[in-house]
Image (cartoon, rainbow, N blue to C red; front, side, top):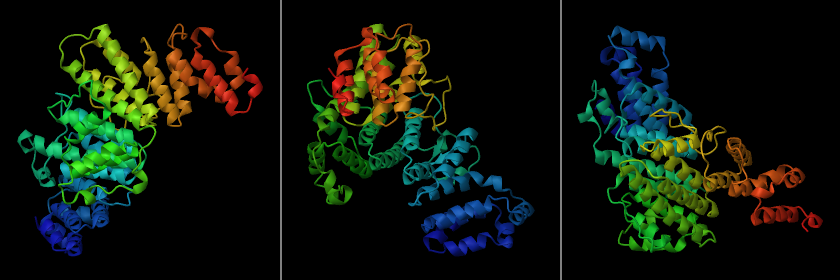
Length: 489
């Protein structure tokens, strides 16, 4: 309380000086460390708060001896100081702290310690400030899985850092459902902003859809007769947070869905600050050719997520026909994302659908998706697991592959500029099959990569059993692009 009061009065420097005096340390004990950091944070002196954390946690012998003399120990206040450090790191707009913040978070998770709402948001903001969109997505994904999509152990989140002082925080001291939902809105807005900044507009929109369906009871299901405009509009009506609404409209403009974005903004014109809330660069206010593909993607994604939820609720095993229909819907949604030049959205959809189906009683289906992702049986994996680029993320051993899903994964990697990952994924999958001539879509998808590596070898080794008209069109286009006109005939 003293640190907070001094900070709000602008006396952060005086508090910091007091905290480093030996007599003060002897008098107040280790808790003065947290007071000094809190004073800096209240005065928006975030780098000074981080410097104070580094100083007090550095093992300085003089400081340590004074604490020991006063009967205290730095470990008693370390959880509070660590949480305050996360908050401070997230507020340093120039970034540079995401690696340190991730390490702190890993320790907290390993210890099973509580984490404040502000500390968790600080971690997410540190990832955003460093442009680390991949790990930001993975952190949000783990947060939603642990706190909304399972009945297992949830993260221990407390409303504020003061709660960390209480020994053995029980369930009564944890954040309420409304407070956790508020944290989700803050984390979602942050990860959507960093995705938009990196050009992953589709991924930002998909995350918004998944988050809304995770924390809202109403399904928002769109009847098959409605188009993509309706899906996007219905989704926006569930958004309560201004930062999320702003990020969502940015995503729509980035996807070329100008008509829908303009309509959403006009619908909120009763808000006097709508122009402040949504300030879109003029260069983004345009319709783009791939917008129609995203309308199709939005509708397919909505149906896919509804199907996923229905499968999880339905007791008993999933019949082969239902498995086939779900996988076909997944591959269709992924290809719409690829056609919209949003391959990261396609890969996240695959990851999300597979992860959530692992809890299904149908072990055959669960094992297939587990093999797709190379997942073990760990219930709470580190949030830094790779979704997008890991060289060993996909393991297809012992399963019957779905050609359309494999083709969509390959196309996504190619569009992300990861031809090496596309090729290793294809080779890994094919190596598990007795015959790959039935994987025609996948073979056609990887053909462009093989032609770039060695066109002559690729053409001479074609298997007629897996060739389609697309195969020859792809080869002809490659030859034309390289000016080898005489080979086309």
